[in-house]
Image 1 (spheres, rainbow, N blue to C red):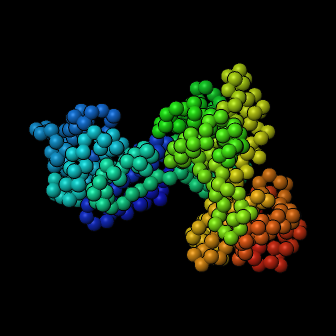
Image 2: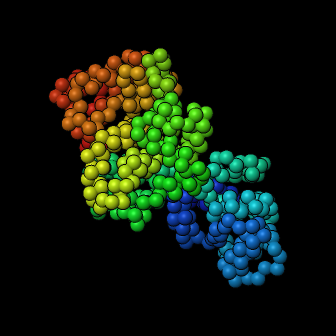
Image 3: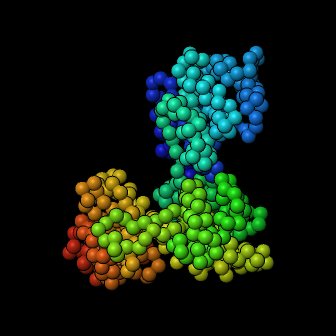
Length: 453
């Protein structure tokens, strides 16, 4: 199990600060925010209410009932003001008021947030209070929340966003796994909390995939379309586009040819998918070599969605006729290592980000990306505010990284018009002797092998 230590510390720091706080906690339906809330509220005086998809009138009645049950009281008035007024901590400690999935409440009753603001401003409850408004709808968070809260948005003291876990978090959660196995987890289920909670690191990657994903009764068997359907409609269109992308069609024109949809229609659907972090538009890092760079391409960002549409979606018939073990061996096992290549690059990027965070990079990196050229790619480009750069390439598949790979990088850097203060060569395997000797003589060349990672 992976724990949200940093977010828990962030909430605790807010709780310990003076005065009242209004905090927004946002994630996705797979972020398992409820576990974080439970851990945070442990040993604290708190009130918890989870809003439902019901009318505003019925929501208030449910809220009122929860207050009566929690505090063993009888409320006379039907109002949120009355509910908040009757809450209590029982001592001088700060009371934590949690309204989970608050977006469903806000949509049907604007008076609710007005009462929340009065609660924060000590108009309803005399003691110290921390109000935690939690939601798991990306559509609400990114598209409508600010407008619905209006001027009240300025009263929010902090926003805590539950992001996906990093590769380092997965390493800690799977201590018995090799680098290859851990990259497999990263490339199959990503850093999504709900998926990692179901992954059993005492079992092999194959056993987990067969049990969780390939088994019709597995916890993640229907997850790909469930995930998309949570926020989007017209699944047949989205599935068609995602399958085309998973098959290697990365440009708008390629998607047009593969799907038969108009470019205008594809653009709209891609925009919707990007809004919910399912896909992303990848553009080359900003350098002087634009004439040698490819235009923006589209890639599936969500690892689980990409895994499903690449390996499983095109073989649905075989999935139902073969056993899970046979399906894995026939359609996944042989291609998996090659498929994971971009995720190893992400691992290396995270490694460099971590070095930068602790001040161990030659320059303070303020932005990072990839340069995608017409004749080569630079996996990692990092730049400081002053324009100084570091670069890196990543070897995942080859038995060892060769000197020629380094020469290819130098050529790509010339095309991108990048001069690097330090160049990092990452390899999941080994480096050839010539590279090792060169690194001893060149202080601007860093070799990072599997042990470092």
